[in-house]
Image (tube, rainbow, N blue to C red; front, side):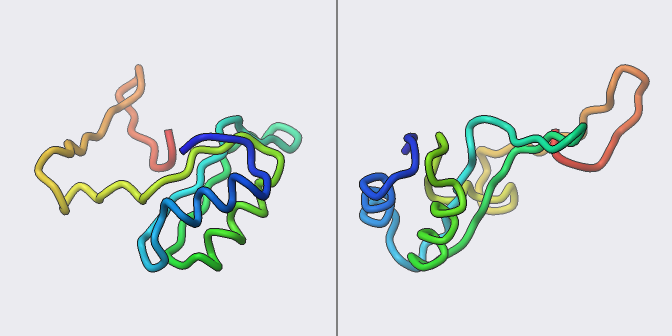
Length: 94
């Protein structure tokens, strides 16, 4: 689901994602402070954690859903290491 976090959106998410199912909340636009830029996200498994994660993004456009499976959980996921133009691999979020 995608939308701007308000009371109605929180209710929709709580209905769509069962309590006890791992979820992911991802802000669509990156946050910034000075020169630092990052994509805010939060994961959890309970409705209390879901509400808390959504409250941290109130008024912001987010994508919310069940947490994607890890690569060892399904055959359809391909993991890869991609070096930059110089052949260097940096650890972190791309």
